[in-house]
Image 1 (cartoon, rainbow, N blue to C red):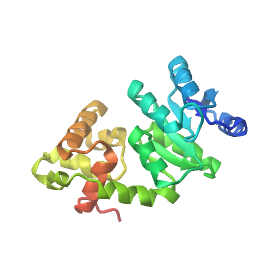
Image 2 (tube, rainbow, N blue to C red):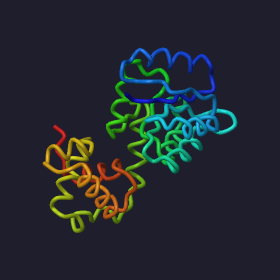
Image 3 (cartoon, rainbow, N blue to C red):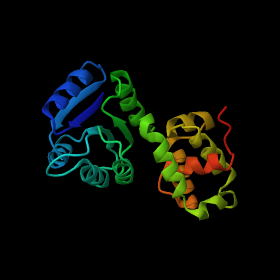
Length: 215
């Protein structure tokens, strides 16, 4: 069961989202909040698996709340669901630790799918903002990372290729007959050696250097 807290300053949105998601047999709406500060209180009280987070709210906005939740409870996923697709909102949400970014016109089935993918460790970004986010990440890659081939072991290179294909730790572990913990350690080492902070940056490096054939 995926326990979810819905955060939105509009009553009608909270009620609507709760009605839509409550139909799913493996999703439980633990609580709802009208702003980021209330969300923090509820997260501490209920410790959900995922927070469905709006961004522009009174008292404390979603960016601030996401950052605080991820700092205090790094195991809790935050999936942004908002009407705002401006670059500054998208980039700030990702930097704050959001695991995905969706717009509120997303179809119900895509929202449910995104929740499941987020819990599996994957990232879901609305197509309307994905291109701009990708360009931003590419432009801000540390130049030192381009010399990755000199630093990664054969096993790390193998895992990087799978990571770049969008595979999560569990899928990589099953493919390579390793434990998830071992894969997690390898991924951490890869990020350190590439001097990047997340899997997305690492994947883009692999793609830019022709390590992965996506066809």
